[in-house]
Length: 342
Ligand code: NAD
Image (cartoon, rainbow, N blue to C red; front, side):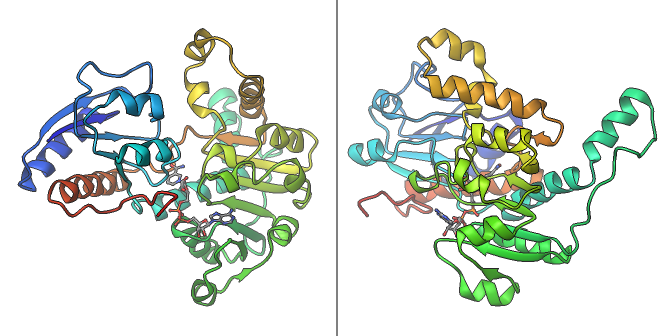
């Protein structure tokens, strides 16, 4: 079996090599530091397994270049960067890491929220830039007594609810599949989407990116949010319509936003490459411009898709990646992503 890992750091290479050796599985391993996309396909595309992270773009064109490919292991929970239809057509299995960082991502959502609610970032900048300890412009707001609207009460949403309980917030939630046991256990209540929009002082999004969740927060739904409310997004950028968010923040309808993910964030990382590719779509260009406006707004905090990134979470990701690979090689695949037809 030949396995190629994309986007791994040197310490991850050492960790994976040791763990795979310890599992007793015989495999040839190759590590490539860069991501995998159509412009970056290695010469030796004859491997059986590839492992990627969210920065790789595994579309049909990429998949077709790997003639022996049998398994794609993504070192992430979300798998919207992989064309599942193309995989199914080729009989290629896809395995993911279903849980590794539910507390980790929820902690980041709260880090963004606390940064905004207590203007931590403004105080930090003020002291570093002017040495000023003046607090006149740094008044924040309490979380205690505020209503948190959780959209998506899966693994990460559940931890966000637990944390909100610790802050004495009132929690309301929306999920297409409400978990009644969780509702009882964590003392929150499910409401309709529109009620969550209208009643929450802060909304935190924890849904996967799907056709159904594309621009779930759009102009219409953002307009239904409580005036002055805050939006936290650690799920996927395209769950929120960027232009609509910019409008709501600029008009003062929303109080602020904490965003770990941006629509078209892959492009913003490498704009030169995007421009050189030629003929960018109007929507993509508008989104990129809107992202720049967002980043510059004083009531917005953007982090670079970093919510997953703790030492403990990465080790859990790598451990599950090894289980995904060794399970497949031993004929007992685990953590497979379900295809549409299944
Ligand atoms: P999960 O599958 O455990 O939970 C998702 C929940 O969303 C489920 O309860 C599901 O019923 C609900 N849902 C699905 N579609 C919905 C809709 N249209 N409306 C309302 N609810 C809907 O997933 P999770 O582990 O909690 O992760 C959530 C997302 O967080 C992932 O899909 C991923 O995109 C993102 N994520 C981001 C980072 C990061 O670093 N920023 C890290 C990990 C995961």
